[in-house]
Amino acid sequence: MQNHLSPFSTINFSSVNTQKNKELSDKYNRAEQKFIDLLAIKNLDQQLHIKPELRREFENVLNTAIGAAYQDNSKNDHNEAAHLFLQRILYRINRLYLFWYDDLHHYDNERSLYLQQIRDRIETAWQEWELAQISIETLRHQAEQHLDVKQALIKRVQYDLNPELSPESHYIRDEMDADGYRHLLAIASFDGLVEGSRLSRILGGTANPIQCTLVKVLLEEYGNGRFNRKHSTFFAQMLNEFGMDTEPEAYFDLVPWAVLACANHNFLMTERKRHYLRYCGGLTYFEVAGPSAYRNYMAAAQRLNLSDAAMGYWDLHIREDERHGQWMLDDVALPLAEMYPNQAWEILLGYDQEKFMGDRAAKAIVHSIYNL
Image 1: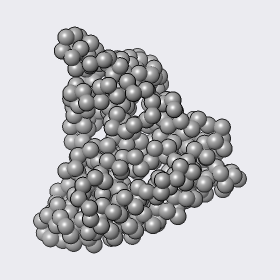
Image 2: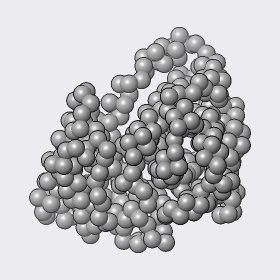
Image 3: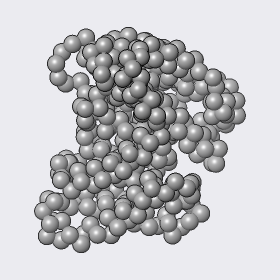
Image 4: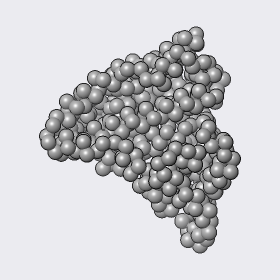
C-alpha cells in the first residue's frame, strides 16, 4: 500500500493565512523539507554527530517558529504559519508510532534520540501554551475542596450531548455548498481513515473493567475485526462517492494547524501513561460530543440531496458514538474518578481541553471552507 505521507516525500507548504506572504511561506517550506531530508538519513543520530551542520538551518527556523507561536500573543501571518510548521513537524515524528504498511526503511530512525529531542522541544513549549488557556487552578481547587468531580463530569456530559448550535454548526447545516462538503471530507479524512489507532496505544496493562470498556470501544471502531465494517471503510466509501483519494493522509496539505494539534495532543496523551486520566477525560468528551457534530454533517448532506453512501459514516457514528459516550462516562471516567480521588481533576482537565481544542479545530475547518 502506498503511503502518501512518506517521511521522505516532497511537500508543498501552504496555508490560507500564509499565502499573502510568499517569503514567510518559502522559509517554512524549506525548513520542513530539510527536516524530511533528515528523516531519510540512515543512522541519523550518528551522522548528525559527525556533521552537525546538517541540522543547523532547520533548527534555526524551528527556534524562530517556537518563539512566534508560543511567545508572541499577536495573531498574524507569522504566528499562524509558525503554528502550522510546528504541528506538521511534530506530526511527522508522532506518526512513526503507527505502522502505515509502507517502505520499512521509513522507520529506520523511529527511535532516534535527535527526533525525540525535537519532539520534546516542541511539546514542552506547546503544552505550556495550551495549558495556559485552561483554568487548571479552578479544577485543582475542586479536587482539593473535595467537590464532586463525578457530578461535574455528569453535568458536562448532559450539556454536550445536545449543545446549542455554534455559528460554525449553523454554517455547515444551512450554508455550506457541495464543494465545501467535499473540502470537509478531505480534511476529515486525515482522522477518519485511521481513527481509533491512537487509542490502541493505551490498552496494554493490568486487566480490569475500565480496560475492557476501552477495548470494546476500539473493537467497534475496527468493525470487530471485519474490514468491511471498520469505521474507516465507511469513510472511504464517502470519499469514493465523490471520486476522491482514499489513501490515508492524501489531503495532508489541506489540514489546518488546529486539526493537527488535536492529533498531536492525542499522541502525547497516549504515549505518556502519566496522562492516562487526561486522555480518558478527553476521549469521554470526544465520544459524547461526536453525534452532535455528525448530525450537522448529516443535515448538510441531506440538504444537498447527497446519496446515502455520501453520508453513511456520519449515520454510523451517530448511532455508535451515543453508546460509546455512555460507556466512557459510566464505565471509564466515573470509575477512574473513584479510583484516583486526588487526581480526578485531571479527567476534567482532559475533557475540557479536548472540548477547547475541538472547538478551535471546528472553527479552523469552517474558515478553510468559507475561504475556498
